[in-house]
Image 1 (cartoon, rainbow, N blue to C red):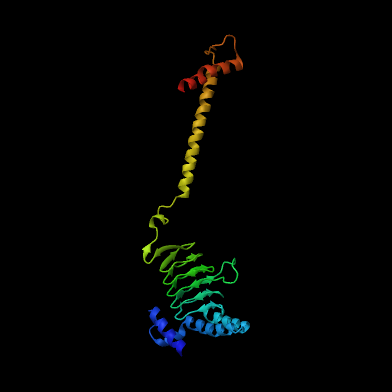
Image 2 (image 1 turned 90 degrees about the horizontal axis):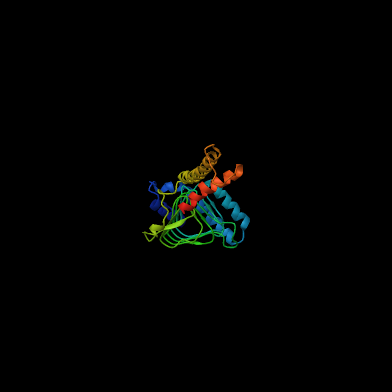
Length: 253
């Protein structure tokens, strides 16, 4: 009876949709936590198979998977609940609220303690993933779909993938360092700028080639008179280039 009274108070406090106390028996969270209470006691007594069996029955009934080894404090409320996963070494404090699609899991890199420790009065929003053996501090909030991979200080708000702390005790953290979600670099514009620069370089080289071609054509014309007596062909080209092209470059220098 104590568990039922506790759940009635918890659900009525955190879900404004409930109208009558009897509706508590329609909440998946009520049954998921009831199954877990039984399974956890058996797990502590090393009745692992029976504990897992009861846990799986609860999962099939509610869509909420709580490993019987997980430690859960008073006042946990799992709203909606479908798709919630809570790992074996997870520890949850008191008065925690979890929404559907949340995973309190591991990364596969750790041994022993593999899952997070959730402090008191924490809210974990829809679709959030908290992965690894670290602590989420008391009174913190994890935003929807955030992926948290490192420790969260108390009184913090975490958003994004990977999760980053944007507020502590209601104060924004380093606002000047936060990513501007509006003025982000445009990759298409960046590629256009690269193409423009490449075209400018090519046009400059083409202009140089055209200048050399013009010199060569002028040199081969009948009106050209080489400065070196009796030179023809390649000698004419080389002498003319030296006189009229390289000479200009030296004067420009």
